[in-house]
Length: 376
Image: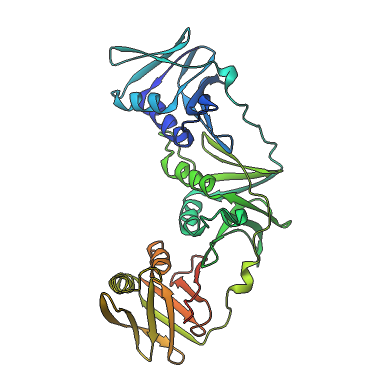
């Protein structure tokens, strides 16, 4: 193998694929990156057996070949190089790197020991706006369950379906205490036959990383392609491809818990509400994390009380429709939802203190956040 490229291209490729590697006592090669010449480029691949990421690095192939070296070591070294030409050459059991007038050799392992990465037959494919998909993942993935007792809640449920006259991807995640849902319109690809899957949290977060980090000096793509086959899914964005297993099981029918009719709605400044919640959190009960929201004709009052620390109350101006209402919520869950909204104002929708509260941005973005109340 003999390959030449720019330091910038090689660094971006390694940054995209190197994130999923880690130490594995039983399979040391899982901490390596596979370098393989392919169609005039260098293909970089990493895997942790649950998912695999690959990226093509443009350059000049002098001689074909393949080899694996420790991903973190190679990334750390290439980061230190100056922008410019980098030459990679296989020399026995080491990868020789020439750049900046320096010659470095990194010991590696044969490519034959690297796990085989499945090549999926893309049976069902969709195209989505990359920036919208990235934002949607950020608004949903944080709400997945960290518990291992219910594996189906440890991922993001993805439903490709017709919503009205439009084809959409509906993404949802819940840990049973709060739920986040976002819809993303499909650029093309029919969803007349509804398909659904549960994507592991780490895999969907790696998709978001790729959508954020990948840049192309010639033409950064505007769309990402999503395809599914059997128990796996693949997302392709430019020269980056991520393949991951899907979570088996059935995601709960969460639509049943989202209220559709409300007694009281309250529009309030998002930033002011977030500050009021943070202030009240300082005086919430340890372990309960409770803050009390009370809505009257023109005011939203946020309060908390703890015998050990004291009490706090903040009153905010609000646009209110409906009768006086109140509810007690976990301040962590409320702040999580407010932090991933970008609108200047948000709307809180309540039935009473015993039913879920729905929080939405004032802009119509297809996003809603549901928080279960603390029942006292």
